[in-house]
Length: 332
Image (cartoon, rainbow, N blue to C red):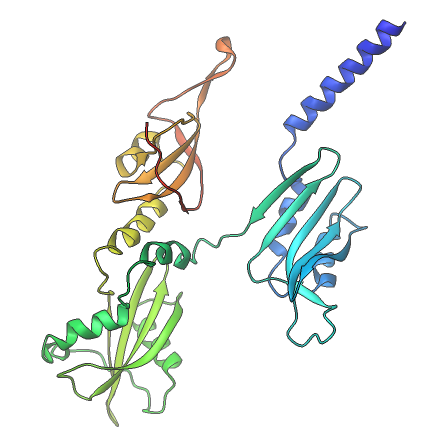
């Protein structure tokens, strides 16, 4: 009898382990709700999002230092979610925190004593990757362009342009919007706008706006010509130092890797990183800037007769691509 009970308990333990191994790292219900949590949301608003799957959710302030800390949301008897938060600027008592700008989540699975760290990275916001590559370069894109145009002795104004029909008092944001719209650019972010003095130009002062559109930076240069004519304008590629050029290119190379491509197609553009590698999930580097990597996951065939061993092939299709990250290359 005792042997039978032990066998049953052993079987239940194996069943529980199998189920735990098969479970996703993030509960499916929570995974669908996380994108709805945005910076600035109050505790009550976050509770409203999470309550769609966890009706008994409740949030309480946890670890806190100064104006920043974490709010813990108890989802159920098993899971809790900790969200990085800050005090609202108008909160005198420090009791009304909101979700922080840099989204960071900790998912606690209490029975298994595990914590999953989730950091949000916005792919369109590639400033982080470019800034890391540019960190040791002092040159400013606008200053570099001004120096280049100044060396041309006014020749940069010779090409014919389509005037922007706005008054001299038009704000810079409105001018940039119309100039980019004339060039079929509608999705962009203005990084900085400032007056510049280009030697040999007329008038003495122009306005330069550094913008990001997709994965590229551009400089919009414009100045007022005269009433009835409007504004002169042109869009330039930044004059980047040699150290920065590869960083811009690698973003384009990484972004060109998409689901459905074959392993052979990926390896024509990128190089597998050194060190230990899997067959399904592979680290790739760009040879021009090997300090940056992406992880590419392939759909591979498996040999059922050999313990389900993965079989790599040049025809394996990409099913998932990570965001770029900075890490020193590995060597064999």
